[in-house]
Image (cartoon, rainbow, N blue to C red; front, side, top):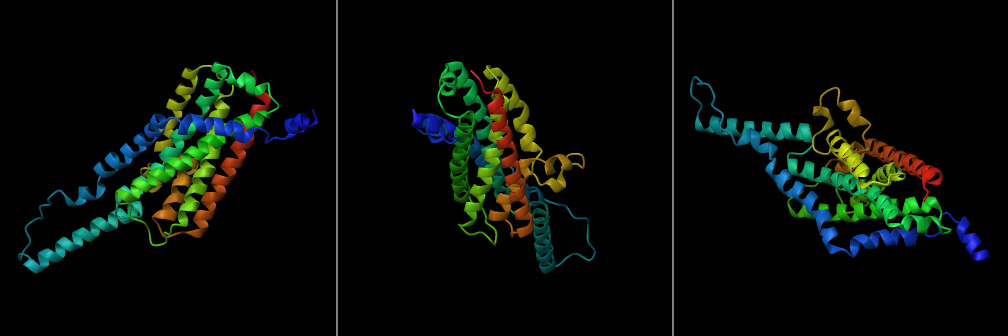
Length: 301
C-alpha cells in the first residue's frame, strides 16, 4: 500500500511505460514507419530537385541588343562568366546558398516535425474511443504523465525521422556550410526536440476534450499549411510580402528552420543562433506547461 501511495504522488510514475506503448505502435508497424518517411522524401527529392531556381537564370537564352563594335570572342566569354556570377550572387543573397535544394531540404526537417506532431493529438482521440484512456485515468499515473508520454512519443519520432531525412539529403547532394561539423547535428536534434515539445503539446491540448476524429482532422487541415507557408521553410522571410513578415517572425517553425540552416548551411551567427534556441526553449516550456495544466483540469473519462 505504501509503495502504491508513493507511486501515485510521483509525477513521472508510468511515464516511460506509456511512452513506450506509444512508440510500439510505430516501430512495430513497418508500413506506418515507411509511409511516414515517404512524404517528406517525395517533397525533397521531387519538389526540391524539380524546383531548380538557379536554372531560371541560366537555362533560357538571352538575346542582347546589337553591340557596336561587336564583342570579341574573349569579351563574349568574359560576359558569359559575369552573367554566371550574377546568377550565383542572386541565389546567395536570396537564399544564403547557391543551391536551392540545400536550402529547401533543410526546411523539410521542419516539415517532418510539424506533420509528426500534428498526429500526436489523434492518439488521445483514439485512446478515448477505444477505452484505454479510461483505464489509464483509473490508475495512479498522473494525468500530466499521460499527456507527456504522447509528447515524448512525437518528439522521439520527429528526431528519428529528421535524422533519416537529413541522411537522404546528404546522399542527394546537400551542400554544407563552412562551419559545419558532425557535432552540429546534435544542435539540430536539440532544436527538433524543443519545437516538437511545443507543437505536440499544442495539438494534444486541443484534442484533450475531443471525442471525434473529424474534429481533430479539421484542426490539422486548418493549421498545417498556414504554419508551413508562413515560415521560412521554403522561402526566406525577406522576400515575403510586408504583411506576412510579422507573422513569420512569430511562427516557431521559422526559428527551428533558421537554427538548422545556421548549423548546416550558413556561417554561424552565434547571437542569432542563441536567440533561436531561446525562443524555441521558451516555446517548449510555455506550451508544455499549458498542456500539463489543461490535462489536470480537463483530461477526464
